[in-house]
Length: 384
Image (cartoon, rainbow, N blue to C red; front, top):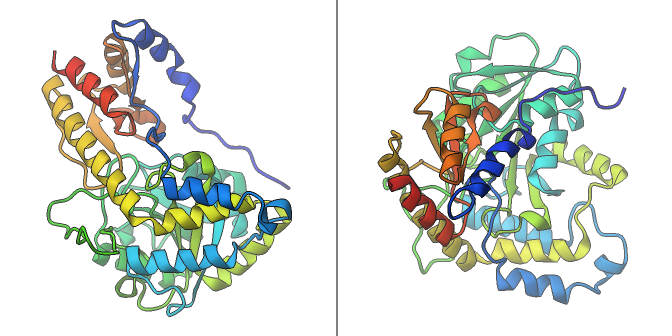
């Protein structure tokens, strides 16, 4: 039957009028709405792209499942950054053309349809619901997916979306919480879909930082970590993206890793519909996964920007703290309505993202994916 219809408030054209107002403000517009990176792509990535531009994987059709080098890089990255040995837990991986298409196609690739239920947080990335709708399945929104009692006895549950660190709230789930989700999902034959695109962007003081000189990275708990998945990838899929860690949003480099019995058929379908990362981009992705120094540099940039943004939003009157993770500051609207706050902010040239997009119209999301100068200017305006 093809894709089913979908409906969503997630429409960026809805903030066009606020952007026009912000552009007319003194000093112009500071856009803190969309989480699109603004910093340079690492030199290692650009070099790899150029060097591979005339490889067989460039002038010939690229490999759907990834080149041997890219697959090695994915395994190395999981071991170093997530403390996960993919082979030891029976996992495989496939690169995706950005993480959004991986999310949007997930329910369809898993053959969900009428009568099937996909659980997701009430406040979350809108594409989870859109992807479920496209497959013709039903969404069940719960306050907290870690509270398995809210979904484990619901008839028809086939999958549970987990997002830690969360877009938009920044919430991070503990290893114990994630393990509980995995156990409950397995007990009813459901798949855990763990969106971990912000895994390397965590900010809590009580989370041990990686040694600055070590070839490792600090990260939040992974659903494929042995103490979370029980040493088996069965029924667990993890999504990750290089868009934020390496400023590669335009490269469309991401991956799905997990249960090889699920990954194999997905890769076969992806091959048939042409969802394949271009050959030179695969080489660039491998370089990005291996360049830990560049990732640490970007981590420091975002940490400083978030700190400045949080302080400025407090000065403006919002009640907020540094997020546990991700790249956004999630605040309750002072007026009680995100659109009214957006109107007031636009008058001083600042544009945020309406919480209605994520299921909470009484909140706003401010993105730290803006330049140092833009964040400093926003802070100055908010403090006036």
